[in-house]
Amino acid sequence: MSEPSIELKGSLFPLSVLYCQDFSVATLRQELSNKLAQAPGFFTQAPVVISVENCTQTPDFAGIKQLFIDLQLVLVGVCGADASLKKAAHAAGLAALQPPKAGKTAEPAKPAAPAAPTAPAAPTVINADNKTIDGNIRSGQQIYVKGADLIIRGTVGAGAEVIADGNIHIYGALRGKAIAGAGGDASKKIYCYNMQPELISIAGNYWLSDTLQGDYWGKPVCIGLQDGQLMLADLF
Image 1 (cartoon, rainbow, N blue to C red):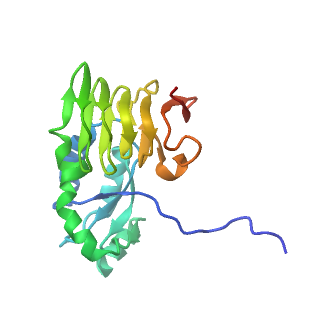
Image 2: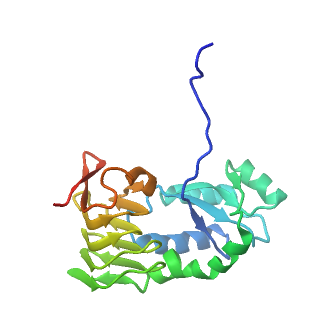
């Protein structure tokens, strides 16, 4: 008997979940446009799931789906939907996903969610020639340096995120997320003394932790783009 030419396997992928109070297309367009403007290029073609747990009326899923296309985002589906919302989402060609299983552990995390990638992004945007930070970047913190390099004399902890339009230099361990060339400049690089990240990205090209756990894991590394592909090299 011949081997099957296809195989379906279960897997886990990190997806951004959008929580909102107003599901109207006009409001979503304004709020998302403001958010995307904080880090142009980083969210391009990013997969997103919308939480509809607190939705009291059926949203215009077709209109929202078109909005995401206009904004160069990929709307994968919805989570937390009841039977009627699932039906409406399916009619628009969207998946209906289960919310995270650990309800009790996820509950306390909800107040922290705005403190991570959403709300604090605005106050941590830095306009400078180059920005140097002496100290560690802790979980939940997000730093974005607009139009310049970011230099960190410390560790970027798990759950932290550092973003720069220029290069990123980390004189310590990288355990969180590092996004260089956020404005789309493919010549930018990430330099770190100990590479153990959750995610690295340059000009919208990214790798997750699972892809990086090889020969360079835990070592001093330079990360750059070559012919549209991320490349790792020894820092020293």
